[in-house]
Length: 72
Image 1 (cartoon, rainbow, N blue to C red):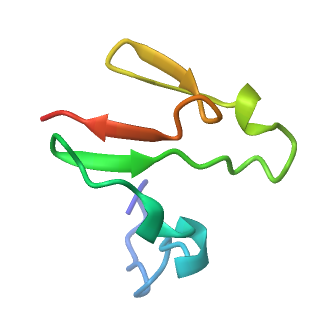
Image 2 (cartoon, rainbow, N blue to C red):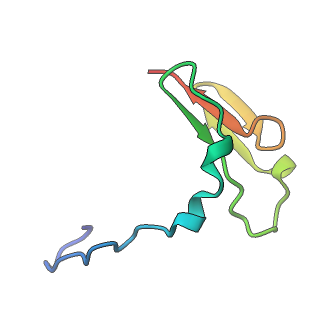
């Protein structure tokens, strides 16, 4: 919980629906620790070729590299 004021967070609050994650079956197996698929959640405002991710000095568009094999 963020901020002050007490209270409790109801079960499931802030948890996205299963449809948020998309098709996880197509994600390749990790060679390192974890493979993630980078999703374009701009609702069509930007194509995958204009949405970039950056990790560990690598920068790629989703169109160029939709998966990231994360090291330890």
